[in-house]
Length: 151
Image (cartoon, rainbow, N blue to C red):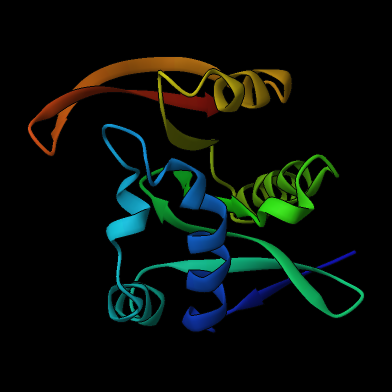
């Protein structure tokens, strides 16, 4: 297993689309599914960084992140559907935490939908705590986003 930093937006976008496709039929689909390759390229060319996890030369997971104030914010954590349950998400999060420490940042943060309990449980199992909730409108519906943080 190897984690590399990349600016290859095509690869990062492909992994994300595969991973988030499970939410395509949700009443309020994940915002990631609406992101175009061009938008991903723009973000990676300007403010975002990305890690990709590879095993035996195959890219299986990715995450995008950036520094905000005194913390590292990550989002679009994605594990290909065929590669789930093997610890890849935890490995990427561990790398993000190491990066935050290297940069001298106070914490690592992410946002997760309240309704996706398995993601909240994953972050809690790694020591993340809920620090706030907010309601956002998407497609005429309200969803609750939970901000989770680990110091």
